[in-house]
Every structure is written in structure tokens, then in C-alpha cells.
Length: 219
Image 1: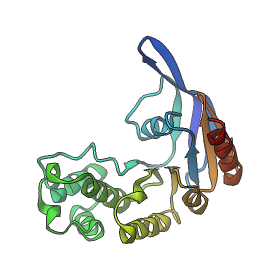
Image 2: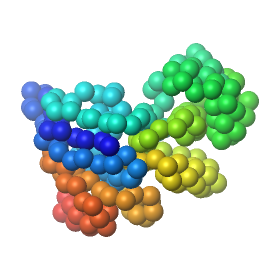
Image 3: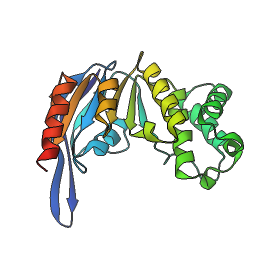
């Protein structure tokens, strides 16, 4: 179960107060996939960061009875001087999973080859995303946070990433940010549309998509 209780997030930009999330109240089971929809700047990534614990709300709470991943594809927690292999082992120890087992999985999935044993600071953005996605999928979470990560790489890697993600969704849930409505339809059960600080929940993902597309045509 994940519950948003009176959740509010606001920023002060150039002396102006901007409310991104305003009094969100909803309770969701951890075994469903939620589409987060909205215009650029509506607060989708902000909500993901609050779910992960990387950002604190202005007020209110996020309560969870299960484990929640960091945003899949986010590479900010990797140390640039450590190799991909060393970073993977470090994260395995943090989350209490078997280090060599995770390292083997990530090395095989990421297709980084010898670069897996080079410093993370030498990686391109695509290589960083491959490593981060592999580490995220290699650790079992009840809820995964996904921000367009399966768009990384060539067509073959995209297909492999989506297949692995769908396999994880058989036993887990997710909060997904995606600009691809076919991907949302294929992977999400319900939807939340973020608009002017309000978060509107839809039990039918098609209704959420329709609301979002209407917003986009009147932007």
C-alpha cells in the first residue's frame, strides 16, 4: 500500500511561490502500475523524487508498506571514480542483496562489456542509464519508479528493457512517467493527471490519457 496523505509540494522561484502538488490524497495498492501524466513542469519528476525519499514534501506524508526503488535510470548515486562493477557491488551491500549475483546480472544485462570495469566517470549518458537500469531491475522492489528509462539505447536494447520491466511488473507495481501513450496503455493500470498543482486520480488509465491529451491540445 502507498498512501499520499495531504501531500503538498511548493517551490519559491524568484520570489514567487509555485505549488506543484496541492493536497494530494489517494491510497494505492503496491501491485499496480500508475501512469503519471502532465505537461512539462507539472510535477511528475518531483512526485517521483518524493516517492523515492530524495525530496521532502512541503507538508503531508507519503506512507508505504513496501519497498520503493530510486527513479530507474537515475545515476546520481553512482561514484564517478568507482567502476561500474564496484558501484554495483556497493549498491548491493546497501540494499542487502548478494553482491556477485547482482554484478553478474548487471554485467550481462547492460551489455557494457569491458566498460563495466572502467570508472563510471568515463561513461557516456547512455552507458550510465544502462548501468542504472540494470542495477534497478536486478534488485527486487515492491514498487519501481520509472522516468522514460526504457527509451535508452538502440531498438534491441529498448525491446529487452521493456520485456524485463514487464516481467518485473508481474510481481511488483510502478509509478511511470512516459510521453508515449502506447507504452502507458501497455504497462499501466491506473493514471494520475497532474495539472496546476492538482493531482487527479483515474481508476481507468484510458480516462487519464484522454484528460491528459485534452490538456495538451489546449496548452
